[in-house]
Length: 289
Image: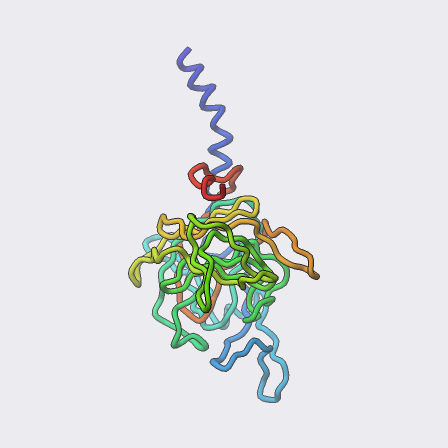
């Protein structure tokens, strides 16, 4: 009798366990990713298409071409596991071949030593772009897709940036004068991004980053337009109503590809994995009420 009950309960939970399995996204061949390279931007970059010495527009390096020459994205082995090195020298991204809707993404990163123009004298920078759709190169640096950004910047891990025409609502303190809004789950949701009064940047709640050179764990939870930015176990931003504008019409932005940026700083990623979600994890549902 006890054995029968055990087998019955086990069968009940088997599908749930299977659906929640973590899928690794990093291997030595970058088989889950495409590579897009745009430009090696200069300090004088102003958002315009770069020109050659004859004043003619320069084409971006492009999709799945040029990385063998420039080695912007390479996989090395450390501690018997694959590690993605992003040189940062050329703006661009690795872009997931698959699109994702409701998921929990987890990865680790640490900073490298190198920085490049146009950010040699600025903070080290990168980011996770999620719900990425459309063509590459839609935003200011002509390197990334329309998306939402989980910022990875020294001292600013978990900030939000809009990309292209995206917008979202974020629990944050109302800004005044030249201040930026600061995320906090105790605050109401503010509308942020393209077409909103508050433009596309919000500071994370707190700095949860580890000392330089140490590995940090980042988690991104997305479920039906809601998202959470989690840094080393700390929720630093609560977001909902993910959307974008197309021809003046607001549309939901709840599904898309994932991009890891190359943005003028050397950075390393490891243990990149994802699992699908059937619902928002229970510990976080209260953050959206």
